[in-house]
Length: 523
Image 1 (cartoon, rainbow, N blue to C red):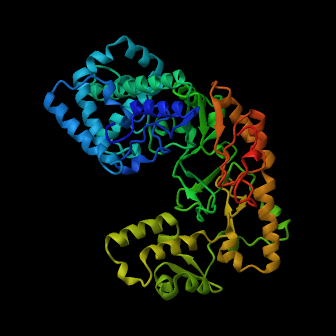
Image 2 (image 1 turned 180 degrees about the vertical axis):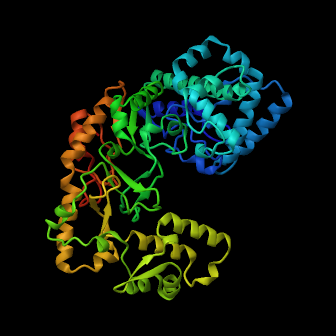
């Protein structure tokens, strides 16, 4: 090891699995996640490429030694130092590995890239390898992964491919460096896969539901993504505000137009390294929790696609439609007093403005959670926290809560359809309703979230998942936890997808611990 587990260490884990008479070894996602070259890149579910492997998993023991004895000794001392740490130093490990690989590329790159093995690899992987290498070079050259800010090459095109792939181009060597790394990683992971098979061990991979919005996949094929939304998850017992993963959501119309080839290629690439795989958040193939880009929390999201409700449908439940009251943040004096206590007057003066009837609205410069986030960062940096009795984080969170305190959210695509805001029963707008209106709203809420969309979501999943399940011979498993609609087990049983069952977190809310004997056969 060199400060972190690598593809060589994976063989040791395979040995242990075999010796203990186990048969399956699951690993976290192994794709490249490099955007900032800081510890924040360590999140394995935010890949920049669905094909490229992460350079940190390179096993130096399987590579030629550096010719420079002084450098060999320096890296050996660094290896021992990093291995002795109580936890992984992600930034130092990756910086050291990149430095080592650059030296090795200068020493071995020309010969390795001229080999028959590399030429065969390049021919097979060129479709993704060339854009990935060029993206990585441009990311490093520009000092940021946010391609929208680059001086040139802000979007992928065939002319870029030809120009940057030309060996006479002055940037070619920098591009070829990434060919070199991916060739090495492919050899090492393929070797680990074959070793697992020889030991009777199944390697199980993990396919994240999302990709990084500034990654190579979005840069190369933006038509497949909705960049005006963010993927996440609705609230649960572990996250009362929901989850905002920041990933772009998928443009399924564009993906289905070519038979989901982006996904098919992704699964086929996985099959080179694994014999089984876990689909992270399989619910995303039925519907994804889509959050506006202006939001920090997940409460203002809604399932997409889903059958939003018209004004007439809402009134059919007996609720009189009041657009201003239902769609705008519910801010009153008693709300401000209960949220901010001694700071309520300061909040009234600084952040909100009266609109009559003892109600307020957020001032334009503070009317989204992202604007509040920016205010918080600037105030914290200016060390201006002394103006408030409450901690600045509590002020920020209270303002976030004001903005999300609505009874319905407008559909992100159809302004004439609406969705009951998730978990609104815990907020002030719901508290302000008459008991009779609470009863009517709860009936609408339960129908919407647990019955209205079942058949629709079943059809949506059956457009996509069969194409992916049939793309390879890998065993298909799914992470089907969370807010699971009734249609999910229908589809999973029909397609023979294995479900995830956790004894300590059973899907039946009335049970404290699950009974293994009651798990589904396909699980």
